[in-house]
Image (cartoon, rainbow, N blue to C red; front, top):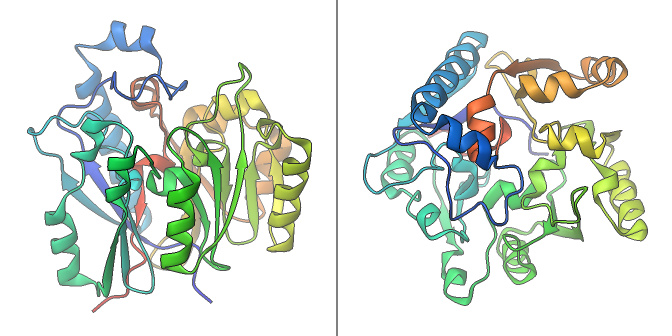
Length: 309
């Protein structure tokens, strides 16, 4: 059985980070007021948050592979590489169709070429042609993967289309489980990974964001049938990025659950105690990245499950 967590993580160091107008319509987590107030310091502060996070992860024994963003083309969201690519233990690399035109520019063949020097790349599944049809599936933002059981959970939204999801399932052999979700204002949740995190033996999920009662029950039962202890978070906690976590591990195998300070501070003592039973909680100040980018810790981490050469 494939491991759920890996110690090898790809991260993109930003050079022109900032508020992305092209993604704001479908991403309610972006804070336009903060963006206006912090326009002159967004890149500087985001870089400081990024460097602090990578330094700490490396110090803990995580193999963080940092690639520098490029000045041109302009890609304000490049700090979130998990949306354009995923790497699998079979040696498969998947490239994904992105809704925002300036996010499509984040895809970089040079990074895949460089990784292929260290890791075995058996095939590349390119789903980007769906962009021509206006259909999108934004990587492990749209997909929350139970890699151990080969099940992909997806909340349908303007960035997560059922046709692309079905094609992902056909080409990878993953069973797909789709549902719909909305925030407190009734807006569709833009990415599944802001309401759900799946680890090896537990899952953090905002069940109240799943608006249909039958779907809500179905998702709980699916997770429990996969052997996951369901830890339910509230809509308010989800808004504070408590669903946007990722379990990784150190080279020595210690499990780490990575999240932002904001996410950690939203958790109740009982939830923290529950999570502590399974893993070590690690959190970072990502306030500038969260406010301008509308994504948090999980979005910054692209797991490299490729086998070593």
